[in-house]
Length: 385
Image 1 (cartoon, one colour):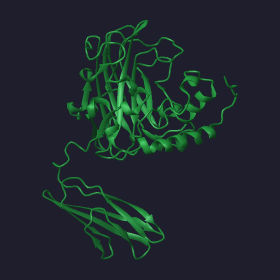
Image 2 (tube, helix red, strand yellow):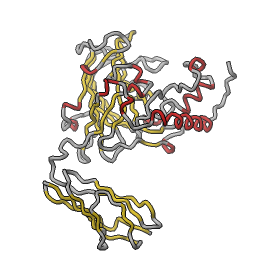
Image 3 (cartoon, helix red, strand yellow):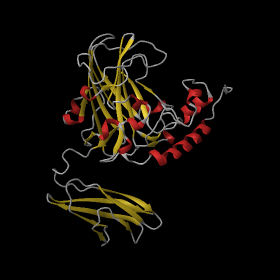
Image 4 (cartoon, one colour):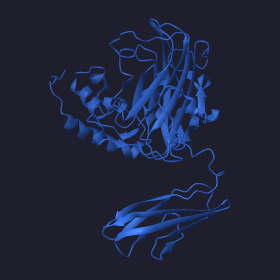
């Protein structure tokens, strides 16, 4: 057994972690959902909230009423793959509903968890940290895939739960939870944090990286219904050091992410079930076993009247080159850009080099379709110094 050092080199762990992640990216980081083995390739849906209907995180879920029922996944979708119940889950014992949402422009996954349990087990001290009814969620925002708790490049036997060995420490601080994240959410929490993060980055469960609220009226051992709502931020890279060095997963319409959940149901001294959406308990530590979830466009897309919208990014300040991006809504047949100086473009997303620097006062996008015409002008916003 190697001698245990009293200090651990975080910078060394950071370097090791980057090497490991880069070496794995050629295999797993393909942005291809086909590696997700759960549910035979089925694609689940994440509802898109409009900017003026973002859920308020207060435990009151009336603001989820606009979400169609097709976005809610219940007990009938779950399978107990570890404790023997299989899909024969008695709703009089445990009955759950889970709904996911997102907001365009925010890298957040919103969730609503509604659960009835005939015996709510919580508030008991346990030094392992998990003998409490738990709603466990796992997210892989960039489909990096593969194991994300135990690095297969380390000696598993040497570091197996031996939390003071050098190999375990290097694995934990450089790899565990870095490219996909696992949250053990207590339902409900009493005298402890709301979520145990299975990884080295406790900060991902803290505001402003996450938020949560509960609504329940029962005591330990009672039956009843619990409401939990909140949001988390998925990360392509979530290091031990904190959010300043982290890389958020970019959420965009029609993107596929890896996601799943499990419920650990304790009834007194025994665990009664470990049910999960992926139908494979390996989802808790290996993103290959997560389900494919699609970030959906608005439900009314294609039915609304046209609404022009656009943004831009200066990609070469010296040359004066700007990339324009169409973000209009509705079915569009034609795009017309007016750069305010006599130059125009018919491309949907043009890259244009202004002949002069300075403040370009007026840039307008006009879109046309079967529903009509819409314009969006920005004043004094495209600036080239």
